Length: 266
Image 1 (tube, one colour):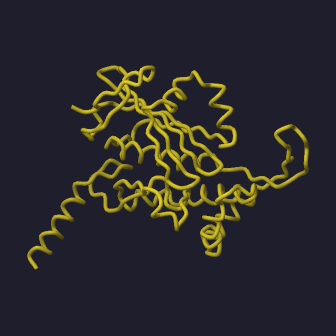
Image 2 (cartoon, rainbow, N blue to C red):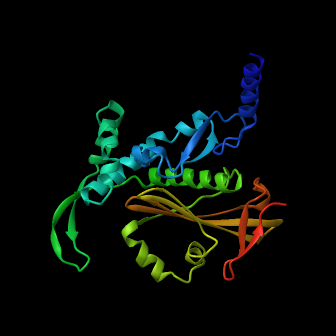
Image 3 (cartoon, helix red, strand yellow):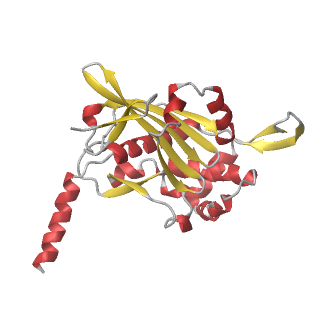
């Protein structure tokens, strides 16, 4: 009995000292999935690694509506394009639409529908269809949360106050963009041996690379992201102080042209 009481008290004290990756305050009482769990097929949970980071339930749930919106939007597009694997998550989306909140979310997407011309890659017009206007800011909000989560997971750093730009690129356009900007440091880093890569599902993956840089008052880290979410890829680049790193075994590139590595914490 005493052991059970001790373990219970130990767990409570541990939670009080655990920092929420979103607000930076102690007392995290839940774990958030990165990417959001809703984007991952249910029966693939045991097939791929599940990345989680500590968060307050209140902070974690603040973007739940945006996460479900992004999921619905991407799956609707994947189904319309008959992309492989969309059937892995479509039933989950359909079930959510049968509930009041889900139907409101579905209706908000459909209300933005407009006629669009369908043109093949060779420029041949093949007809018309309905397209929707996505809420870009809601997508970026989910992207920023994922970037924060992965940086916390990799380095232990909390970067709540850092600027996190998010770029949106249709996944089908990514090869052309990489080829066009092949000499850009962004793509050099993400193509190097220093790049970290996690496959979270058959159609969801996260690539990122960390590089040490000099900055005013000390040293910093720049991290570059490419996050594949079904038909959409999110691109981001973030700079944060090196002294924010809390993982002693974290490593980062010091010169991407020679793939040299340096311990990130002393």
